[in-house]
Image 1 (cartoon, rainbow, N blue to C red):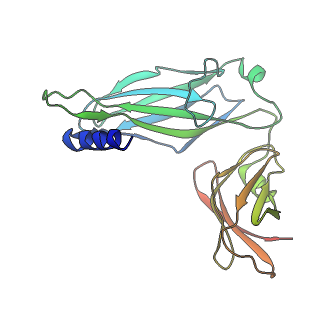
Image 2 (cartoon, helix red, strand yellow):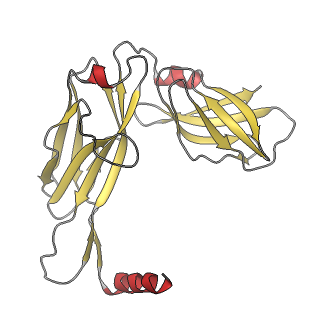
Image 3 (tube, helix red, strand yellow):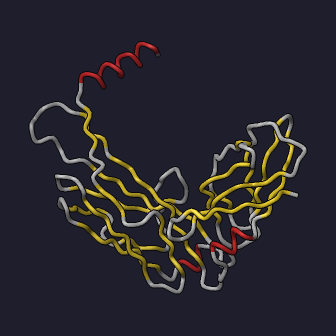
Length: 237
């Protein structure tokens, strides 16, 4: 096994590494409300060569394509010339109501694969496609809770499991809360493995430092629909 690893490492040294990474999106998340017919994402090519881009939706972070999402992406594979942009449309169909719960928000992932052009010089090179993904939120029509409301309704508690202490965030709302920062006051660090707290769900965060017997204050920020980080602070009872 060590010999194989050495061979692979040698190949990476001998073959020039080419990574395009030439596309940029105009947003960090997509919010699709049921009352809307479609949403759009603008893709900009900031590179010097034409970019070939593939777009798809996936159920989770495993990136596997879903056969039937209830959404249609116009032109899932396309080219973008240098210094140009392309707007893709994401259109909802009648299948949405059958596929997803109506009492809570659903989170999918929208994936962008930036496929590098072939080497025109004829030299050996290793081209790497750049995979970017962002969260895609579908909100049923009857859901009126805002991201700020959901963050306000988070409840927190300390839970001991074995020898470890955990900070538990409970989401009492019907939409996702996305955390950008999380720690306890007095520089007590928390392991932020998952930044999302699902609707009506709980997420546990391991506390990495020793707890004091004083009042425990949670310092966190949530991410709003525009991608801004909103700071919050709350006492844990």
